[in-house]
Amino acid sequence: MSDRHISVHRGGSGPKVAIIGAGVIGLGIGWRLAKAGAAVDIFERAEAGRGASWAAAGMLAADLEAEPSEQRLHALNRESVGRWPAFAEELEAAAGFDVELRREGTLAVALTADEADQLRHQSEYQRWLGIELEWLSAAELRRREPRLAPGIVAAAFSPRDLQVNNRRLVAALETAFRRAGGRLHRQTPISAVILTNGRATGVLVDREVHGADTVVLAAGAWSREIGGIPREVLPPVRPIKGQMLALHMTPDAPLIRHVIWAPGVYMVPRRHGTLILGATVEERGFDTSLTAGAMLSLLHAAWRALPDIAELAVSETWTGFRPGSPDDAPILGPSAIEGLILATGHHRNGILLMPISADEICRCVLTGEVSAIIRPFGAERFQARAPHHSRPNAPHPHPRPQEGKGSATTAAFSRVPGDAGGLGGRSAENSKETTP
Image (tube, rainbow, N blue to C red; front, side):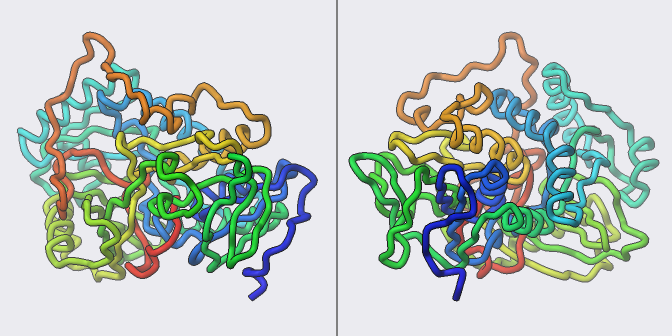
């Protein structure tokens, strides 16, 4: 039980930092801080990275997700995606193995004329933002992905979108963090954040105080369950359930090479033959159940676009919980309590935003500086929110159908939830933990 032993961390000469949550956000911040010389302890209520980080699809689709109401978030997403190649290279060198960063891009396909019209309007808005997109006819699409359904009308291709194997990413971050001198405490739930004269000075673990100069709250969907923090300071984060499944393709003859977005589903091909299908968007708290309706909906939507999946074996099903905020954007930076820094609420963009979250929260801890790129995403925006207006004269896409409360399916061309990306994971039980 050495992981549960609490003592003063002497692994670094810099400030002592306690991080709550060992998803990719907590691990990424911890690695950056440990590399910089901080003495870092990460406390995880279950196993590292087995929540939303494990339950993701690994899509890094900043461009194809851009919406009129999310221009600031798109800027943050795009900056983070731009950092991904160098971040992955550095992480792979530190960990000693690759995270399978892929650069084929993303294809959004339309199966009907109405869907093509909606997709074209969406693409026009994204091009107006300066996003590089290519419109493909049905013939051009099938030259790239010949196994797609012959009835597909058109597609938009986003060449700058990436994908990463999120489960390898978790393993790489944990390895790099440990090698940098950080300490990870598994199966170690935090009872409370310790406040002394209004300042965060550590965390309470099994009735023992672990002192720290700074506490970072990166507990994902569980961020409001940490004791010791006044209710009005707790970040407004809630769990947003997602159900997913994986199919097994022949590794040397995969059905698709690109990430495919089709009405009601996305499909993410991985090396070694895995094909991930996701994901539902459900306001059901921490309900871990897998439902027949959700599986049927995802499989049917995928089959319409890629009929050959009918012959594939189902290799895995799971649920996970995205950490949603009131405006679907992350909560990054200092809280109203001195010494308590927030890094949570990433919703569908946890994997995508990991590099920028790690870099900028590390900067905030070490220097006190809140960089301009994350300043709009502080918790204070929920106390006094000004109306947000789109840029004038922007060509707006047709309104997108949105998921209703408790919905078990994704809507056609609604933004893809979770990670950029969707949720993914080993099982419902593995989702019960702190997540990015």
